[in-house]
Structures are given as structure tokens and as C-alpha cells.
Amino acid sequence: MAATDQPEERRNLSILFGQGTFSTIAWTMANPSVVLTYLAISLELPVFLAGMLVTFSQSSKLVTALFGTPIAARRHKKKMDLAATDIILAVCFLLALTAAAYGTSLIVAICFVLVILVVGASGEYQAIITAGFYGNVLNSQSRTRLLYTVMTLGGIGTGALAIIAHRWFLEDAPFTRHVVLVMIGIVCFLVASAVILLVREYSKGEEPEPEAAPQKKPSKFSIGKHFHEVYGNFRILWAMEWFRRYLRVRLALLTVELCIPFYAILAALSHHHTPRGMSALIISSATALMVAGPLWRSVGQISTRTVMIAGACLAALAGLILVTNYFVPTIPEPFVHALALFIVTVAVRGVSTARSLYYLDVAPQKYVIIGIGVSKVAVRIVGIVLSFILASVAHLQHVIWAILALALINAGTALLTHRSADTSSTQRPAP
Image 1 (cartoon, rainbow, N blue to C red):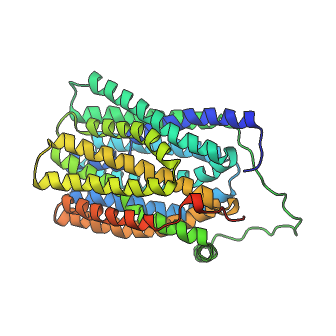
Image 2 (image 1 turned 90 degrees about the vertical axis):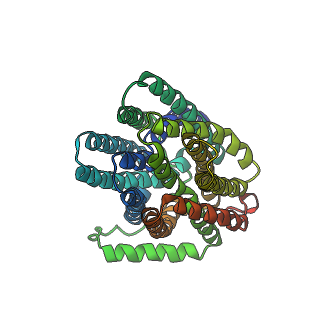
Image 3 (image 1 turned 90 degrees about the horizontal axis):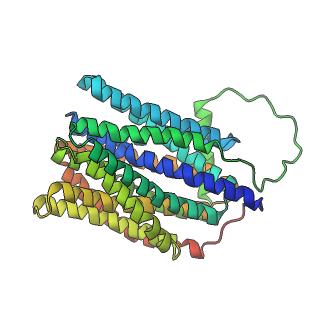
């Protein structure tokens, strides 16, 4: 990052603390991996459909990684796109709640599939453009402070709001309480959308473009040409050691992120008719954020690789706890599910944040957005195949076997990640 006006960066950082906190609360209260999966089981939709929501999400993210990355790379006012995606997310969750409240089983199923497709695409585009946005308005140290701090503040805010909602609506039906929690998330999405517009966006470290011939009028969009361009970008990036190293880590950590929806399916199958069902999961997730922020920030000062290894180990531990308790019941179900979700949320937050910081530290500025898009294409292809297999296992046998498979894979992931280079010994490549 080039030298910039420090007061200007401090102003942006303070705004992003607030925006990031509201965004974290929104994504926790309306986490599609938990909310849509849990509601699908609560409304007695097939387990296979609940599991396939993960596959649909991965598919929409793949399409966004393919076609959204070039758009994100060309956008100068990235904050406008971030605000727009938050509004789209709020509308999607509102639509899902409306369908769940008034629709038939078929309408709910169709609506949930459409919602998860749009939510997956919007969330993926938001993740792609956020990397370039943070790279433009913050330096490396500020990015690290922001990501870990909003994790803690978001956890505190989510926990407080979830407990208040839990007490105020204690006598209401379980579904009403679920709706209240998601509505809080919807409001936070809208607030985050408004706050992000206060950031002053400017370009950093950009060299003036050399004089060139007048640009030709853009040709019509061609899918074949676009795929050729993506493949060309992949070949260019694959020739670089830093990208090969990152992609190996990114693929290895995929199964950590796939854990949450399958844990939510098991929890919903066990106690979705109880009034404390989804509230317990949300409060557990919020508590995990409060722990994850300071924990991973302190561990991350040692190395981001340590965070990723520890996160994979925790995800494996959470799965083994669920499997063990399923065959040898020891801990009451609501508590063991909340405990497992707490552990895996800590793991996912640590892994996703450390992975992002690792990438921003090793990727040249000119390849940041393109590299994210190309890596996401590879990851989503693998994610589609893997999530479909896990959903099929959950439907044909029991979701506990899918959880056992994830636990074993995550144990192997920790070993694979250990072999990757650490950022402390990785020199940032020249742009």
C-alpha cells in the first residue's frame, strides 16, 4: 500500500469498525448455513434438500467467481457494490421468511433454493470485492486489526441481541422466535449497507497508465471467450509459486467451512420443535465470535499458518464430539450441538480470516482480485462435488456419517496445511 493521509485512513478504519460489526451481526443472525438449513428441517423438508442447499450455494458461488471477478476488478467505487449486496441479502432473507410463514412445502422448497442461489452469489461477490476494497483503503496492519476486532465486537453484539430476543419472546412459538432472530440480521444488513457509504474511497499506489492507442469498442460478451480468459489467468497464476502455495492451502481448508450446515442439520433433526433450538445455535455462534477474535489475533501474531492448522484441528474435534455423543450419549443434545457449533465457528472464523490475511500478504496488488476469482473457481468446483456427496450420504444413511467424514478429512487437512509455507518466511512477490 502506498503512503496515504493517515488521518484519512484512521477515519475509514473507525467507520469500518462500525460497518464490520453490523455486518458480522447480520451474517451470524442470518447465517444461511444455519438459518436456511435449520428452517428447512423445521418445515419438514427432505434432509437431502437441506444438504443440497450447500451444493446450490457452492454452484452460485462458482458462477460468481467465473463472471463476477472481471466486474469486481474493473469497479472503482467498490463501496457502492458492497452496499448493494447487503441490501440484496436483506431482501433475500425477508423473502425466505415470507415463504416459510405463508407458503406450501413446494413453494418453500423452491424459494429456499432461489434464495440460497442469490445469497451465495451475493456473498461471493462481496467477498471478492472486499479484498480489493480493503487493499485500497487500509494498510496491512489496519486490515488485521479490523478483521479480528469486528469479529469480537460482532460476537458481543450478536450475543446481547440474541439473549434479549430470547427473553422477550420466550412464550412465543419456536417459529416466531426464529423469525425474530433473522429479522434482526436483516436490519443489521441494511444498517451496514448505509454505513459503508461513509467510507472515503481512493486509489492507492497506482502508477499512471502509459500512453496507448485509443481503446477499441468492447466486443460483445462471449462465454467461450470468457472461459478462455479464465483459463489463461489460471495458467499465468499457476506459474507463480505464491499462488500454487495458496491454492493448496485454500483447497485443503474447504472442508472446515462445509461443517456448519451439516452440524445444523443434525441439531435441527434433534430439537427443531423446541423453543430454544435455533436461539441456542445463534448464541453459541455469537459466543464463539467473542472468543475467536482475541484468540486468533494472539495466535496470528505467531503465524497465520498456526491459526489455520489449529482451526482444522478444532473442526475435526467438534465433529468427533458429535459422533461420539451420538453413539454413546453423554451430553444432552441441545448442549452438545451448541458446543460443537461453538467449536467449529471458532475454527471457521480463524481459518477464513487467517486465509484472507495470508492471501493479501503474499499476493501482488495487481493480482489480488484476479487471483481470488481464479482460486474460488477451483475451490467451488471441488465444493460442489464434495457437498453433493455429503448430502447424498446424509439422505441415504444419516447425517452423522457425513459429519464423521468431515471430521476425518479435517484431521488430514491439518497435516496438509502444516506443510505449507508460513507467511513469516514468505517474501511478498514483486507486482
